[in-house]
Amino acid sequence: MRKQVEKSHYQFHKYMSKKRWMSVWHQIDEVSRFKPSRVLEIGPGPGVFKSAARSFGLQVETLDIDPELKPDHVAPAEAMPFEDNEFDVACAFQMLEHVPYDLSLKIFKEMCRVARYGVVISLPDAEAVWPFSLYIPFRGGIQFHVVRPFRNKMIHTFDGEHYWEINKVGYELKKVLSDFYGSDDKVLIKHFKVFDNPYHHFMVYSAREIGV
Image 1 (tube, rainbow, N blue to C red):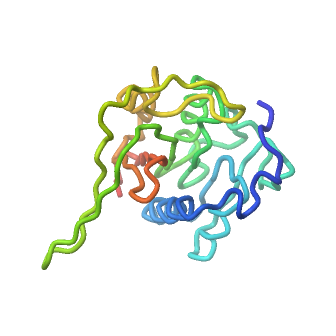
Image 2 (image 1 turned 30 degrees about the vertical axis):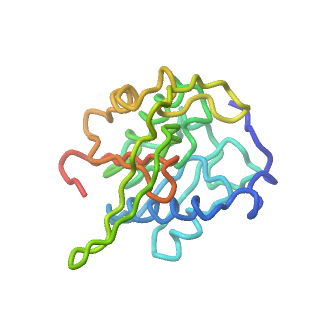
Image 3 (image 1 turned 30 degrees about the horizontal axis):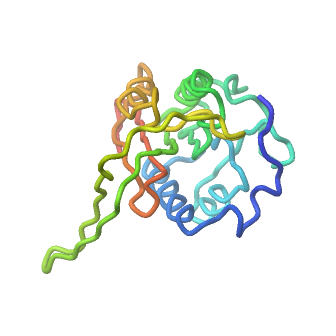
């Protein structure tokens, strides 16, 4: 696969919206729950996750095909140069949609292979929702999404970056969850949309014997 964007694509005001910052919080939160000593991130982009995670004691190594992004490992994600279970956690955030669907599944399988305890991914979800927040006295705040009515699923057209997205025609959430089922020793333990950024849909997988 060729790189899709130049390094300049990741300029702060162009790339790091407040919504994306909210996703970074969830990235660190989900990965840190595994209490990993060694984390592999596939497709680091500008390196925000690695830099922020390091501040909280997470040791992150990155892998990408683009040496200009200065990853720790330059290699194709579908054929990682690592032994089985070499890392505690493997993660890829808003990355797998940048390759054709079949290839994204191969990369995901590689992530399950090299991760001992857990795999954390996020993917774009095109389903249109309305976010609602309520405050209930003595109970606190409640946040939830309501799917916008009367909207047909869109057909995805490659836009130079995304080959596919969840909840577009042919990539319904049920199908994606089934295809990204995990592996013999990794199981899906939860999936969710980020409330402040519902375009980002997280999936968290854990080794069967531990859970988080």
